[in-house]
Length: 169
Image (tube, rainbow, N blue to C red):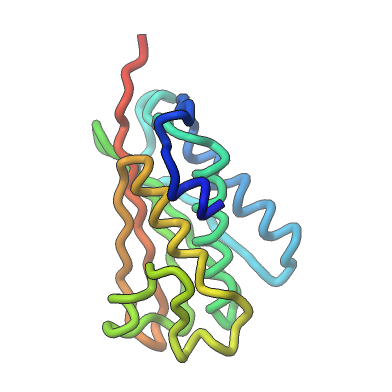
């Protein structure tokens, strides 16, 4: 997946993707395979029309990005819970993933998007350090942005902004 996303995206056909359905599919799949994981899903703002839930993109890649974020939130939280919230503006979909896990230090935040980087705090958990690197590349290819607000011992808020970059006819 990392090689695909790092490569030439000009040959990939983007199409309208309904983001809330992709997020829910990723969360439900994770819960099926990892029974200890739990999630809540809420709309911070309700869309006025169904089209507000769509962005132009690759459903498979967006699914992979959301799955990785939710998996990390569950993995690094002792309660294995993640709260997912969607909000909207005229041009942006914002998806927030909040956990109450181990958190990320300021020093680690500078490097967590590097391939194969694992913080000392994360080494006791399974993984190889590719998930967030993959997520970042997918979000970038979708002309979006990802940010982290975190404090060690208090959890992490991952925010993904996806810009609505197509017009319905």
